[in-house]
Length: 122
Image 1 (tube, rainbow, N blue to C red):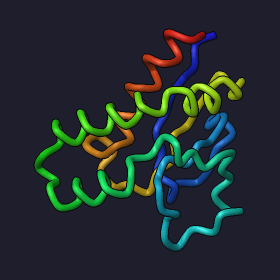
Image 2 (image 1 turned 135 degrees about the vertical axis):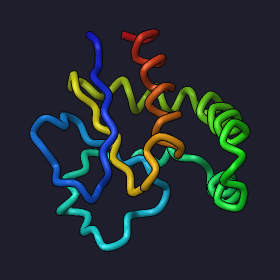
Image 3 (image 1 turned 120 degrees about the horizontal axis):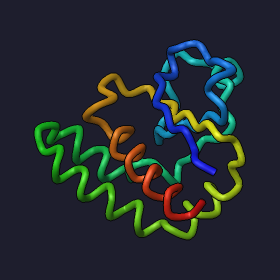
């Protein structure tokens, strides 16, 4: 079964079209109540480590190096990620983030990683 992957900011209204909503940030979003966010799971296993997040914040022009390091982290957590993702049965998965830049932050890298994972495992 193919999974439709979407990215949405947590500040946008949840929708029935979102399917399963995974929060993909290590820190909770400011100003958002957890119950109002309608998150199905807070997937910290999918987030960049605290150290990598701090490094990228200090080096925002190093996107390629960030992507390389983040993918290395994701691959090192493959068993935990497989356990999380195999429990998701919805055909739609929305990655929910507080990140402003959806194209250059971790969410776009994660979406590509997950696309490949679902293609290989479903």
